[in-house]
Length: 160
Image 1 (spheres, one colour):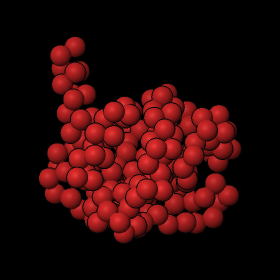
Image 2: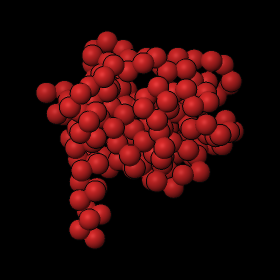
Image 3: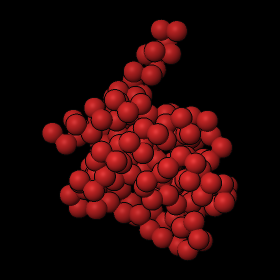
Image 4: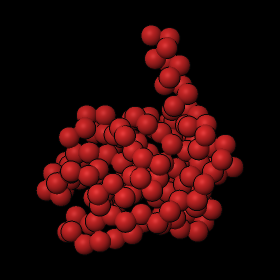
């Protein structure tokens, strides 16, 4: 039990220390819209971005989504936004159904092969989220469902 609490504390409250200690620039990500068109996601100047890799049939992903919806409601458009990327193999019909069911209020795309995942260092488990600062640097990597207080805390310290 103590070990699990320690793993949670390290991965959730601090993120990945390697990503925080040595920020690297976010590459342009190739994704697909739910309609099948090709799109690109890139860092925006003076805007923080949380990229959330998820799957419509992933229980931890579905459990964290209400927190992400609330976060977008609170901070979206104020120098912050969330982008969801449904992992490779997710069907657009299943993603659309989850968007309606969960009231997702941020853009959601489909991964275009493994390109987006590999460009960000590989996403092996869902959900995985990456926090990008206003300079386009990856400053946090969170594997597993994020609790709302954790991400608000990390946003606060990144904005300061």
